[in-house]
Image 1 (tube, rainbow, N blue to C red):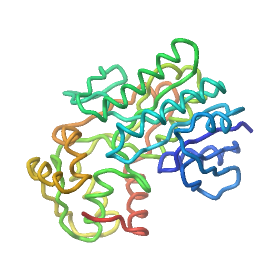
Image 2: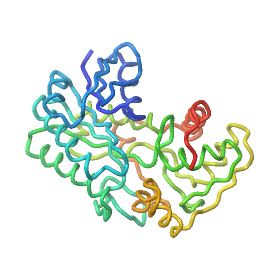
Image 3: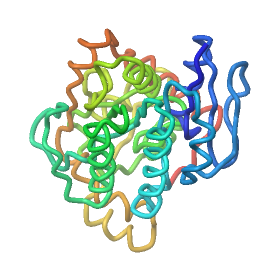
Image 4: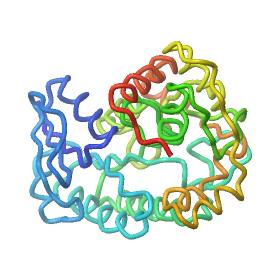
Length: 312
C-alpha cells in the first residue's frame, strides 16, 4: 500500500483519489480547504498548493505526486506559475513521480487531429502558461532531477466538470430551455471523461514508459454539441434541444461586462471548427479504452439534475 499525493480536489483530483483508494492505496488529498471524499484510505489536508516546503513535507515517501490543480480561469497567468514551481520542487526533493493533468490549449489553433507530436504553438496566454509549465518540467526530467509525465484531455464531461456543455448547454437542455452557445453546433469535437483522465494519470505515473513525454487521454469518438445535447435530452426524456449559435461579436461584447465570457474569447477557436484529439498512443501503451460517451454523459446529467448548475 503506497502513498500517493493528489493536489487539487476538483473533478479530476476527486476521481483520481477515489480510484487510488479503491485500489487499496494510501491517498493524501491536498487542497486549499481540505475538502474531498470521505472514504477509507483518503487523508484530506488543507494547504496552499504554492507552498513548496509544506508540499515537500506532505510528499515525502510518496511514489507519485499528481497535479490536479485548476486555478480560477481568469487567474491562470498569476496562479499557475507558483503552483507549478512548488510541485516541481516537491517532486525533485522527494523523488515522487510528478504526473500533471494537462489540456490541449498548448497546441493553439490546429487544422487536423492533435497527437502528442503536434507542435506547441499556442498564441493565447493560457496556452503559453501551460507550455511554460511543460517546458520547465521536461527540462528538469531531462536533467535527471525529476521523473515526470503529463496527461492531456479535451473538454470534460462527467460529474462536476466545468466545460461549455456542462455550464451553458446541458442545464438548459434538461429543462427544455433554449441554449445560446458560442460555438459551431455541428462541428465534431472530442469530449474527455474525467474518470478516464484519472485512469490515464495513474497509469502514466506508475509506468516508467510514460515518463518524459505527454499522453492524450483515451476519449470517445468526436461528436458535435448538437449531437451531445440530443443524446442528453434522450437520456432524460427532455424535449428536443433548442440551440442557437452565439456569433463571436456577441461573445466579445459580452466579455466587456462578464469575466467568464471575456476569458472564453481566447479559446473560441476550439469551438469554431472541428476539434479532434487522437489518443491512440495511450490506448496502445496502457490498454486503456475510453468510457462510452453515453455513460459519461449520463453521469453529467445526473450530477446536474441533483445539483443544478448556474445558468447564464
